[in-house]
Image 1 (cartoon, rainbow, N blue to C red):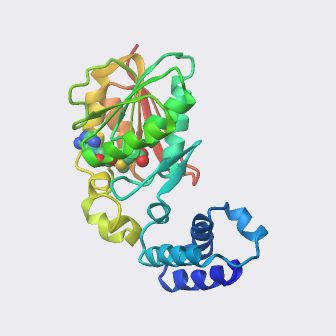
Image 2 (image 1 turned 180 degrees about the vertical axis):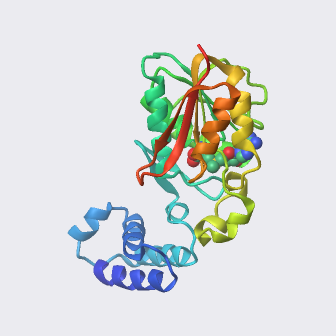
Image 3 (image 1 turned 45 degrees about the horizontal axis):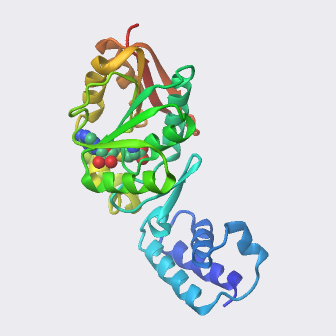
Length: 274
Ligand SMILES: C[S@@+](CC[C@H](N)C(=O)[O-])C[C@H]1O[C@@H](n2cnc3c(N)ncnc32)[C@H](O)[C@@H]1O
């Protein structure tokens, strides 16, 4: 079959399966199977070699089973990085890129800051900060051995220096840190049913379902910050005001709320008193 015919057939299959963006996903999967970029797909109207066509059909079948595109591809873009991802880790989201942007603003003027990322997952936040603020010393933790293995693999492959520590929240970490950042689990258990199958059935529950991590991090970060150091948190849609109030009540100053690309309030940060 030609590239064009393969795309048409796959788009139809993905549409029947309820995939929200069937054409775009078909393009990503075909580009991956052929080892070309999405734009190169259209430059090449030729037949796909049979082996590549077989691989493409397997990838489309996985996506039609509502496996997330990122897991099927095995990699996902985050800021300037391409991270390897699989079901051991949450797929990095665009709103988390906004959190990193805010972290870089908070670190501006600090040439060699120490940074702690709680709940490192794939390594997205920690590695992006190490990449974009090269003077930073970045430590990152996770309670999931599996997630840490993925973060280690990404750090090694990208050649970015991040110290990885296994354990819950701040276990064994006293600081002081110039910045503590976290994208903690923030889905309420009773909200799981409302999530699309890509999330509810494939991403790790330990990365999704909240059990008080946001509140604990806000509480435990403050004594571990340098005077004027910052805590930056990604929060659930609709929760920014609550988290901002909590941080003020704990003693944080200059508490600010930031919006994601869709203008939803998703980032809250505040400073330790100077
Ligand atoms: C929402 S994911 C964020 C992953 C990554 N930082 C990102 O933004 O893509 C939350 C991560 O926190 C970890 N986690 C959950 N509870 C934790 C805890 N009590 N202590 C440390 N890590 C925890 C999970 O294993 C998961 O990797």
